[in-house]
Image (cartoon, rainbow, N blue to C red; front, side):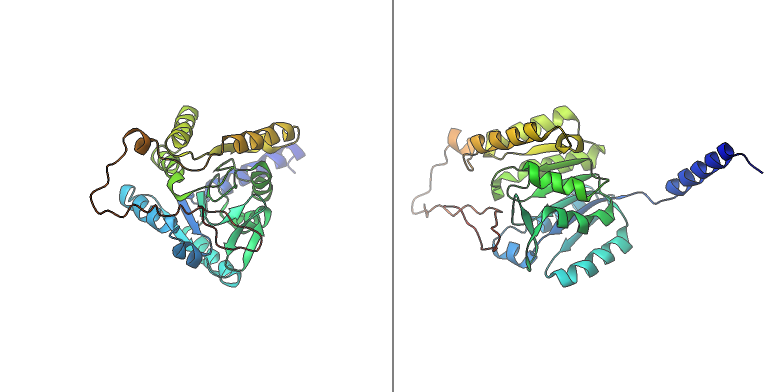
Length: 268
């Protein structure tokens, strides 16, 4: 009869073999939360980004889910899981605040609840195109609900449509290289703020754990101090001369913020 040590080694070997046989993760899942509302607000950027990614990276496995009701959400996610399996990274596009996300048309759901919906895909990276999703309480609850999650990229402030390009660049780097180098992450996030005023935080799991509460709250405060709304640096440096008779009325900037009751929010 094998010794206890031999049986333990055999068990560990079987676990490793079973893990090795699991299919590789698909590359990117894009979720447009409450898709009808995003389309009405001209914020359905997930659909546009999905087309861009598939054209630039035809070999990558990309899927998109457009949510409607919570009743349909479970069915939609199950179909994607069956067709594509796990995903290495997830992009969420939707109206939100630091307490929750308008995951469907049924209203705001806490970030922890959102994480429980997504944990079946075992993602390592999460990109949140949503207002105040980069606040420490939001990312902390998301990490709590998704054990496999390693990094979250999100804005700790109100996120405007023009400020999402920084997130797009980071996602492209991940798809191209398989990782985001620290120096690339810093450059992309500094450029985002310099060009458009978009703040993007990168959170790692350990940064929201025990003993990190004071630092996390400090980062929240820094975000509030740096939040001056959107701007266009290139336009400020090289102002465009309007053509005669052009309509000079500025179109309202649209952002992704939502309250608990979920009214449509527009700036200016």
